[in-house]
Length: 368
Image 1 (spheres, rainbow, N blue to C red):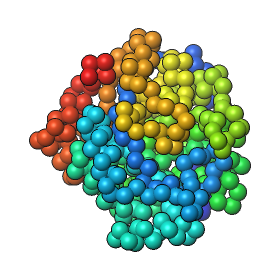
Image 2 (cartoon, rainbow, N blue to C red):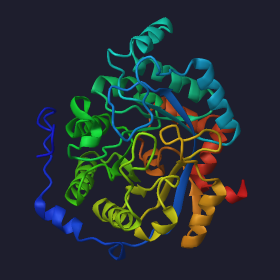
Image 3 (spheres, one colour):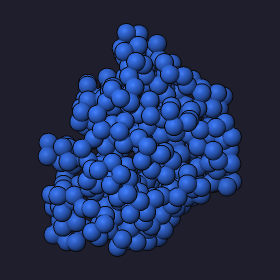
């Protein structure tokens, strides 16, 4: 049984036979995608407070040092992103700040909010006003928390990371696989287009990698809401000196992801963290969100590639590269989106025209 699933009443079973079949998959067993896509975004770290203390993460700051973006910073960053042609406002923050972060709670109260999710809702409103589509990735969420912000997001996400307990998740404050799967389930029940993924190299083994991918598949089969799965290697940084997975590992696990998931679910690798050029024949079809404006605040030591570099990856694979929105086309076509997001897509302004242009044909970065 996946740890923590009983606490959240999650009925999910991954058979040993399915795991063994997936473990037999190698890169030569999957087909390369016929195209690659990417999304242009701005990265907004709403707060660096987090109740977890994962040993590979440089994103969180301890109490007394954690920051909270103010409204002016959010608006200015979104405005710069829109001016640069971005379509996505990627909101991240550590999982709910707990009672150690008194200063964060005090600041939220001063700004008129009882919780970080209430502030996230205001931040999403600012992004929409400035011509960007919000995509919030705020970690584990209860049904009430997600429902409070879902209608102002084109899509949302959380990394499953792994279905096993690992030392890298940090003792008594560790992430719980069952809680992560519950967030995926909540998103499915609320009809939220969702991004998730696995983190490779944090102490899991091959069995757990296969199990994680198959658990994601089962959640998608129930609700149809998973739009993409990220295969992300852990990388060296000031807190993590435990090494990164080698190329052979990344090629195999990426191929396993492609084999495990339905065709409509994209397989993504982050091009600033993974050797994307060496993985295009392993079934990836997306290069994720990249920003011409902001750094990767979760992995600040690893710069986003320039859009021309993404073109070079696609050219090496001899496939076209197209720009996409933070919500995949099929969810737009099939009526998944809320009225505020539909209104943003159809707005008679530059942002609306930009969104429709991307939906209609995609945009090659070499042409803009």
